[in-house]
Length: 199
Image: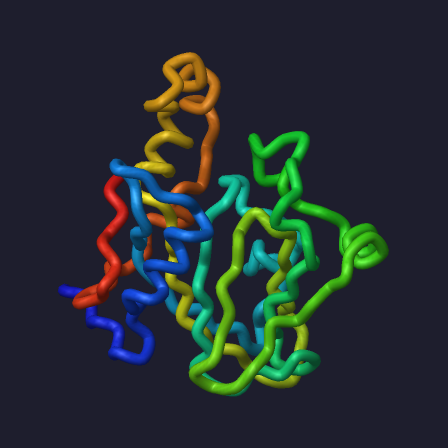
């Protein structure tokens, strides 16, 4: 079945592409692109056992962006928000080779960083550098539904996984199970002013 296109209010615009280019960098061979989108719904029954993002983590790929668009109002206390550790997007991590290396203890993160809930009205949202420490809160009175659009720089994923620009890195990086893109189940953006990332 062909994926449904995102409606215009959720589809990335040219101004978003310019912002992504400015943040991630661009050159003659690479520019902003999207791997696609997914929908996320947190509700009763969500727990750390079935929601791996409920632990503080970074996404193990360095700088990549995810655009979260709220499908309804998200309350900072009861709305199961994503919470971001302010300033950690510039962190360099000792290891990113496995899932356990990217998970952090709640107490430690909240003792060393300001934890900021990403909340707001329906239609609002936020742009997250996935190198930042963040957590999806699974507890709360209210369900949370969001569309998450994954954004990157054309060719970066290929470089990260296969070391194309640095042949010496290929032997090391090729053995890592790097989540780039984050999922094989992302749906392509249809009719967006953002090209699809090529792997």
